[in-house]
Image (cartoon, rainbow, N blue to C red; front, side):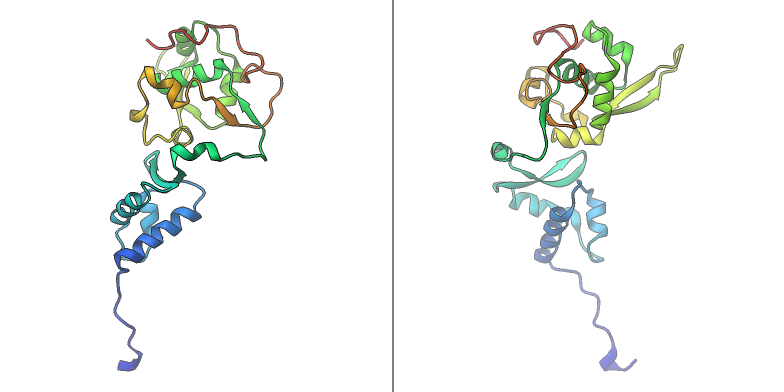
Length: 216
């Protein structure tokens, strides 16, 4: 290879270009991405972690923010502007009190068995309630307990963290903040219409009211 044909030396993109790359990657992704996943898409020598810090700061006061959810990065509408967004293509329904209470119990007590959920709620948990939460992918099956019958446990998922904008379960709000967090009061989700079943708000399970003590 002659001197004229020698390829140029490898050049690491400058900080501004790395920031633009991060913006493009996050914008194009439908799912949150980890720092390593973002860096793997960038040219060799790029520092995705540093670029993410700069982009996060740059977007802090904009209508769209760069946020960490479930330990990953995503673009999200600024919380104070969420009221502007509506999805007319989906039928919006509300989860029943039974479903939101069950979800909250799993979130705070995980891993937890169905029997333990019922002990906390003081009422039986229907299969439909758990099936709906599994369908929404907000909960999943955990390890079986090493007790007689080896009952299965339930735990929350990455999709749960993403939906509620939490980086990890350590960021779950205090009990007094549950209604503000959306776990108990703001219960609107977009779901496929169900049968006449207790997981939806129309026909709730018999059980304690809104002021019930859900947690030990």
